[in-house]
Each structure stands twice: as C-alpha cells, then as structure tokens.
Image (cartoon, rainbow, N blue to C red; front, side, top):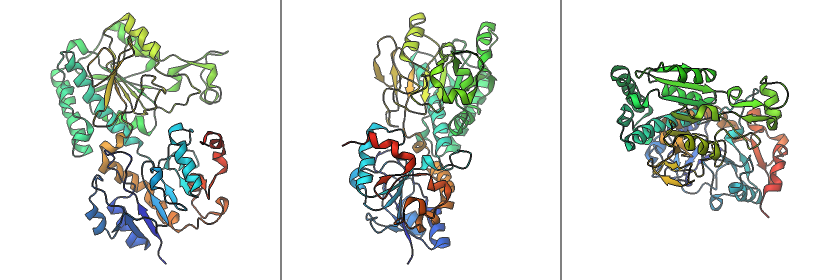
Length: 438
C-alpha cells in the first residue's frame, strides 16, 4: 500500500505564502517514490492549487489519512490530528510560553513532533532553513525603511527608490533595484548630512550572510569593529560609498573576570563573566542588522538604557534603523517589544519616552521586527527550503511510528529532531516538562 503525505494550508498568518513542499517537489515525490501527496487547498499560498494537481497531487481539506504531515509554521491546536507525525517550526525548544499549550496538546494527542530547527549534521549545522531569505528580505526592508526615515526628516536619498521586499515579483527584481541604487550612489553620491552611512551586521551565519549579500550590491567599503572609532575621528569619508562592519562575539563582549583574552568556547559556557560592550559602536552606526543567535543568559546587545543615554547626549543621533531579523521579543535588542507583520512592518521606539509609534516617524530608531521575513520572498524561499527537505521525505513517509523512539528507522539527522513521540517528550527535551501548563 502506498504511503501518503500531506501538505498543510498555512493558517497562522494571512501573510504566510510559503510551502514546505513545492509542486516541483511534489511531482518528484509522486513519480520517483510512488508516494501519494495530499494538499490542503489554499488561496494565499504562492503556488496555485492547480500547480499541485498538475504535479500529480490531490486536493483535500482532510489530511487524516496521511502517514506524515508537513507544514511551515505552528499548527493551531484545533487543527492537530491525533496519532500523526508532523514536521514544522514549533518554536517550543526554548520553552516559549506562548507555545507550551501547543506542545501539551501534541502530547495529549499522541502526536510525533519533528522540528526543522533541530535537523542538523554532525557539526551541529542546520540542514533545512529559511535563514538566508530572512537575511535577504531583512536588508531589503531595512534599506527601504532607511529611505523612508530620511524622507520623514526632509532628506532625499537614493534609498527611497527601494521598496519593501514583499512588493517585488522576485528576489532578482529586488536585487536589481538595490544595484541601481548602488550605481546612483557611485555616480551622484549621497547627501553630505547622511555621510558616512555605516551599517553593522551582527553574526556570520546563514541569516547574516544573506543580509550582507544584499547590502554588498551597493558600493561597500568594509571596516573592522576596532577601526570604527578612529575612522569617525579621521573624517575621511566618501559619499560615493556605504560602509559596513560585521560584528562577532569577540567585538561585542568583554571578559570581566581575569584575562581580557576572548575565548569563544569559554564565553559560551560562562556567559555571566562577560558584559556587552556594544553600546560603544551604536552612536556611530546608521543601521544595525541583527542576525546573530542570542539566549537570555547573555547580556543584551542593545538595551533601552543604552539608547536613552545616546539620545540624552544627542537628540538626533546617527542610528536610524534597527533591522531585527531575529525578532526575539525583549531579546538581544530590548526595543523589539513586539513582532510585526508585513502589512505594518515597523515602529519607532522613542528612547526618551519609551513610546512605541507605528511607522517611521518619531524621535527614535525605526525597528523592523517582522517575524516571518522569508514569507516576503515566498517562491524562492520555498524552492530552496524544499530542495533541502526533499532527500529526507521518503524516509519520513515510510517510517513506522508505532515503534519506540530508539527503534525508529530514520536518518540520524531526523532522529535527533523529534521533540515528542507517542505522547511523551523524548529524552533530549524532558526539560520542557516543567514548563507545560497543567
């Protein structure tokens, strides 16, 4: 009897247009692996239902007959089907309080939960991710917001020609628009009152690499973090270029006990011995693109108090935009106080009053905190994601989930990506038990 997989209709956000499995991948699953594909119809998905039908899939709202169900974002509790294996981004492994009811429902309904975030190789590197596309969209949107912020202050810049990522037909179209702006900067220069434009990128993983690749379409001069202060003092700036700095942990934290030498492994294991020194850079940055991993045991990179100090010293400082691609609420960027949607993607945080004002007008930096940035580039991000997922689909569909966790015949990359199985948390995730609601 043929195995059957299901592709969920994404229902968490109206703006979510991605799919874990594209029609192209569905066609290969049917023709090459003899696996039946059921697809929930969706008007918002970037791929029309007709493309799935042409690929050999069947449209149905009922996925109860599936052997495995694929999604992107969290499944609403009322849509969970008992005794089924699911794969989606659950946002539960940090014991996120808002999703603990979801995890409890998964256990109560005897569901096997896989999480894309946990699918890693032997080096601990994630194998299936949207991160690069979050970076692409995050920088496109941040450049768009930079143009709008300057315009609200009466300054016309070439960045006003850049649109929000969601308003381009493709990633290539967006890239071409950024390139054209770069050519204008090289040809005509930037207004003196905004020169030098300096953007800081935190991190060096997939998110940051994607973000920097968009920025690098402009005429870029790269600086080191330890060069920034002297660069500003020199006054030797070009208005025919923009500047960038990639910040790593060694630039952002200082050891407060014993030696000043920075040891990354020691830092990770003893975070309380380090303090953030990021404030020293903030006053000289025009934009900050935040794409680095952060956890609560580390000091924040940007605090409300640090921004207040900067604004007390200069009521109109250089920093205009914070593109918080990580979108951790109250996380490494303390002013990220809420997540936004693409239809209303930003707000101004006023450091001196603590007020939040939707849009880009106000006395403070614009905060971009869209929590599903890859959905602004849905076609390309789904294609890339599906390419990474596809090799594992036959094994996931054919596994016997009635067996105990340790006996499941699965690729090792996925064996460790199971949070719950047969109504119980797996060994690596027992710590979540104490966070579940009664």
